[in-house]
Length: 157
Image (cartoon, rainbow, N blue to C red; front, side, top):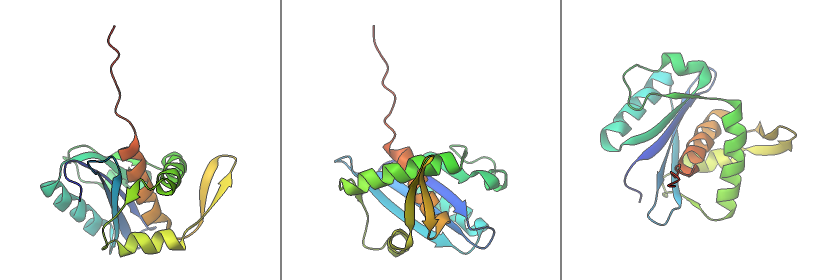
């Protein structure tokens, strides 16, 4: 089980419900992924606020169309995510999963079902979701890509 900071992402499902994903890094460098559906946007935001009470949030990504509905004062402040982050995130997720670098607890039924129900195709612009619960997949791949991004290294001259 990971400890330390987490990367979190939220996306809504066209106003019907919402999803939250959280990714932590294990000591061996693998990423531990969790994600879940929430009844609505407000309960998703509340879920993130509760997470932040127990784990430091390194980065918070929010679907760009709803960033203005995220409460002010959250640390770190939310960053907008959209299509560009999804295309990158899908490729990163695919590569990490194929390499055994993504793990999860046995209680991640929502993520397992979403991944199994999702079809992705390659287009000129990158990978695209063809079928599946886009909102949960968006949140998962945004958080995974953010957690996988290497930390900048300062050059010493």
